[in-house]
Length: 213
Image (tube, rainbow, N blue to C red):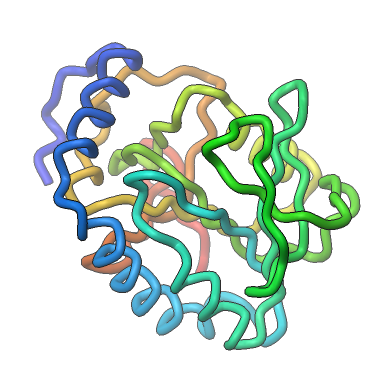
């Protein structure tokens, strides 16, 4: 991966990644989702203890589909929690199984689980977080949709002493060289990226330090 790039301001970079997703064929989301699930479930026994807790999300629109991943996590015996968007750009979490009812949330196009909402302090021991992203660079800097929900959550999670691995799910073309867009102190680096081609573990800082996995 060639890391000699000139950073693009974040807003036009986000616009371009959204445009590229709109150009994907109609089958891309489901095909990517099946590959992501296969790679994730093959690796997870090495990362998350049996019966451990995994935070994930319900995909929407042209995002790589997460249905197969979520169902596979439950079938493998993991405790799955999904996010609920709260006022103040905060996330709470609900336990999820394939029978859990869904409802529109603050963003009507994004379904959310119905059930008891768990704050960060009420979350069970959390071992791994799968995050949505429009893109991720090779330094672990994530391009989100711009709301800041996940950056706030990761900052609070880490401040609370929880070192759960954070892994972004993207298409292969959305894994790009470090510095492809301008980042700021608010951005929370992730530990890895999962694409339809497989896993890549990322440095947390320019020195290349990594989580032990």
